[in-house]
Amino acid sequence: MISNPSILFGLNAMEELDQWFAKHGSRYSKVIALVDENTMEHCMPEFAGSLENLTDFELLEIEAGESSKSSEILFQLISALQELGADRSSLLINLGGGVVCDLGGFLASTYMRGIHFINIPTSLLAMTDAAHGGKTGVDHNGIKNLMGSFTHPQCTLIWTDFLATLPKKEYENGYAEMLKHGLISDRNLWNSLSQSWINKEEIGPYLEKSIQIKTEIVEADPHELNERKKLNFGHSTAHAIESYFLLKEMEVSHGWAVAAGILVEAELSEMKSRLPFIEKDEIVSRIKALYSFELLKGLKVEDLHPHLLNDKKNRNHALLFVLLSEIGKAVVNVPIDFTEFDLAWKKCFGNV
Ligand code: GLY
Image (cartoon, rainbow, N blue to C red):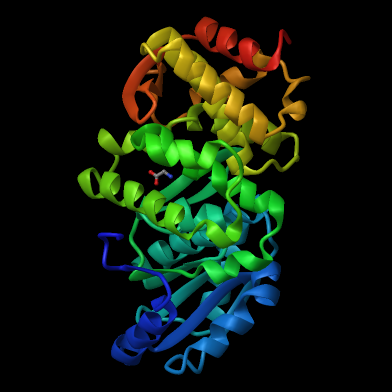
């Protein structure tokens, strides 16, 4: 059971959202839905057809993909809201994956100093992570989430039927964040998810558990002063990989980069935070059985160094990582130097 009442989950969730509109809809001067071309085609018909109490709304459509999470698109959307006559009483609905929820959340949190928004994640990644917890973000100058805010949606609808049309690669992308939730907090969840892929039709209970893990961590530390940093396990490396490819104008998926980050940071955990060898070995062999990392074989590890320095968790130019002391237990603020990082990287991806 998910303890945050603003996260609507389960068989009655769409009905609950309809009731939400029945109760609160009249307070909004205008409702605008932000979609990408995929969610427009695959998710909007079911969404619009399911809500009796939301009959009239405008649409804003962006191209799918991380390149839309940019300051340029943000400014275009601000102009589009202005042209639509959106005012401070307007409501934005973000119907999409992590890009739509991050970008739409930031748009809503800044337009006219902030308007209300609802997140309706349509990818596994956004359902398990990006759509709740209050983080919004936009990339700038090749740096992931250089702009962002902590702003919570009015509510988040998790409707797993949307996963039916999600491509396999995107499903696997989100699955990595669920594996991470198990590794930092719940050995049973890790065990269930990591031995082989759990298919979409059976993912519901594991997704619920994964959301609950994040919810508890966010409730304990909403502004990421300490405990919430645990959610960034695998992410120091992942963001460096993503930023490296972003500069090369190649898009790699966030979850795949997190899976790579889990490998490197498991090696670092054995070196620096006493993760037992046998547990490190289990993490590495199971992650490598689920994901392929061929793309990283030609990458020179030194090329990641400048990107590692941009990590928001660092202090005074020192790299600070989240590592594991055992499966199910994370430790934060572990100082790492480049020599240690390079060694861990080479153990995972070879001697480049
Ligand atoms: N995605 C990590 C967090 O919400 O803190």
